Each structure stands twice: as structure tokens, then as C-alpha cells.
Length: 69
Image (cartoon, rainbow, N blue to C red):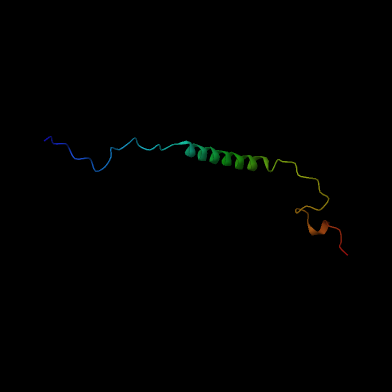
């Protein structure tokens, strides 16, 4: 009778899982785009041309406004 080794209880470990897969890099790219978008809004927001309005601005004092009814 030949003595065979018993089958292993646990299978051989495979390769380790990938840490930085495509989902990770997609999330990093989205985060970078959000940061760049926020910087663009902060930088361009005050410089963006405001629409012309006829109403008084918030910096005027009440004495310069016309009398109401």
C-alpha cells in the first residue's frame, strides 16, 4: 500500500489582491477634478462679469436712496 499525503485543508494562496485597481484611480481622478473645479470657481468667481442691474448695491447708504411712498 502506498502512503499518500492527506489533502490540504486550505488551498494554496493565490496572488495578493490588487491594491490600486481602476476604481481607485477613477476615484482619485474624480477627486482631483473636484479640487480643480473648486479652485477655478474661487479664482474666476470674483472676476466673472456680473450682469448689469439698475437696483442699488448693498454698499450704498440709506441716505442716498430715493424716498419711498
